[in-house]
Length: 376
Image 1 (cartoon, one colour):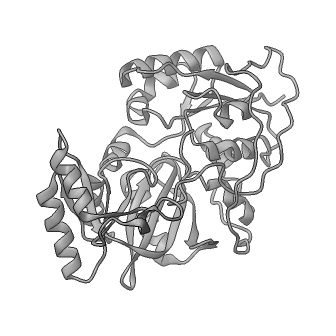
Image 2 (spheres, one colour; image 1 turned 180 degrees about the vertical axis):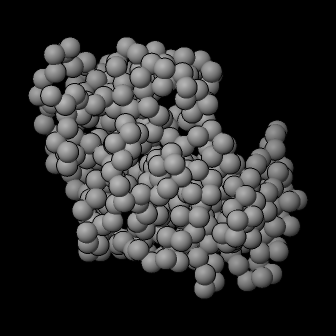
């Protein structure tokens, strides 16, 4: 009898309820039980899991590793997919392996490169992957100088934190004065330069921002699966142009993604994002974790979460090529049930039938303006 697989997702994105659904509907017909932890008792990932715990707040990275090791032992975790404190967790891979847990995450060297976008851009430039012009700024003078240089070249300037995930902190600079236009409709990413400069002048500490030109669509996110042998098993691009989404296998997107995953050892699931700068694609961001929209590859006949778990367990799924490319689609939100109590209930020791989930369309549970799911 094939044993069940226990998978743990820690403080992950709400959209990963679909990641969990795909693990349970795996083509190997393998029994999968999912453990989830989060800081918010009303996170939908806790409700979707078979067992769930609230995470303690305020733990240092080192203390979190101890907490994670304890979770793996107590819960009998076979595969751990770390998001929170990923860098600290992967630095202790041998300790997790010693308790029987495989980490579905890249090695610490790869995680370190892509934690800081400046270090990442410098590194990828060195292997020939194109990046947009960029400036690292700490204060008002550097910001204004970067914006003026971009505007002189005919580009609109934007900025985002030098480290961070998704669209958090992303803003587009405008010279238009603050007016009622900024108060109409939904909140906008556009911010007047004078207000940003004033905020920096009043700040008690430096910022750490990356300033670059506003890149154009289409945006292409290449989902990759790479083995610990550095050999890529899957690379499929998801395109985004306004509301319209689709898929691509065009080499202008896949070739640089392969170069990055194999060149930097981005083992297991990673997501590499490109946009257009002029007439060529340039790197926008590299995520050393599964993308929130990874489940959308199911429209191409691929169950990427299960293939990754197989790889982590040493069961090589081989090369994964989509049997077809799904039609264009859009992303909509849908309801998911929550636990009826503030502290997540636990499934009894003897597994029972999971509570039925309210069907939801393929799409995000919650999303930022950049379409990236955020932890709830």
